[in-house]
Image (cartoon, rainbow, N blue to C red; front, side, top):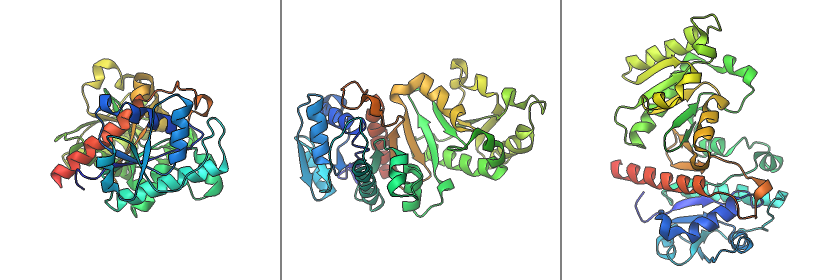
Amino acid sequence: MTSTLPLAVSIGDPAGVGPELIARIYAERKQLSLPPFAVCGGAAVLTAAAEKIGLPFQTERIADPREAQKVFAGALPVIGTFDGEYTPGTPTTAGAQLSLDSLHYAIALATGTRASGLVTAPVAKSAIAAIDPGFIGQTERLAEACDLPHEASVMMLAGPSLKTVPMTVHCALADVSGLLTRDLIVDRTRIVARAMRTDYGIAHPRIALAGLNPHAGEDGRMGREEIDIIAPAIAALRTEGIDATGPHPADTLFATHKRGSYDVAIAMYHDQALVPLKALEFDEGVNVTLGLPIVRTSPDHGTAFDIAGQGIARANAMIAAIRMAGEIAARRAQTS
C-alpha cells in the first residue's frame, strides 16, 4: 500500500443516511482535511442525495483507484458503473442489491491492494440476507473475503476517550455464558493486543477485561464464569507478556476515573461494550474490525431510515471512520 491509493468507501443502503453523509463529508472535505477516498458505485444515488439536502456536489467516474487522488480536489471519485435509485426512508430489494454490490467491490479493492483501506456505510442486514441468505454481516463477509473464519475478526468500538471490544457479539444474552471459553478470550485478546500495537502505535497496550456477572461474580456468589473461565484466561495472557487485568466489575469499569487506567476494555457481551461507548460518544463512535490483513472501519450507527433525506443526520461518526481508516493505513504502510 502507498499514499497514492485512496480509501474505498461502500455506499451503504441507498434508503438510509449513508449517501447523504458521504455527500456532506465530501462537500466539507477542505475543512475536514480527510484522506482521499473513492466511493464504490452509486454515482446517481450520491448526486440525488446531495440535491435532496441542498449540497453543491459533483462526481467523476474513475476506472483506476490511483486516479482518485488527482480527481478528489474537484469531484468525488466514483469507481464502478453500477448504480440505483435514491429512495430515502424506503428500503427496496434493488437498494439492498446496490449496497451489497458496493460492499463486494470495495472489499475486492482492499483485498487486492488497490485501496489503502475500506470504510463501510451502514446497511440493512435483514434486507441483504433476503437476497443473499448466507449474509450475516459486513464484518463476517470481510473475514470470508480474507479466507479467515468469522471468529478471527474482532469488532472494536472506538471513540475519542474509550475503546471497547465485545467478546461475544450478535447472540442472545441467554447464550453468552455457554459461548465464553478460556480459549476464546485468550485468542481474541491476543488479536486486540496485536492491533493496539500495529494499528494504534501503543507499544505496551493495557487491556482491562470485564466480568460477566454483577460485581464480577462476587467470588462465585453470583456465578462462576469469572473464576472458571475469565480469570484463567487473564492469567494465561499475562504469562505471554500481555498486560491484561481483571475481571473487573463492569458497572465501574467505564467510570471517568477508571478509563485512564487502560487503553481498551474487553466486555463479555454486546451491550456491555456498546452501551457505555454509545452513551459517552454516540456521535463519534467508530466500528473497527481487528485481526484482518486489510483496514476496515465503519460509523457506529445504523441506516437511520427514519431520518434519511432530511439533512439532519450527523456526519461525525462517518468522518471519524474515514479519518481513523486513513491513520491506520498510514501507520501500517510506514511499518510494513
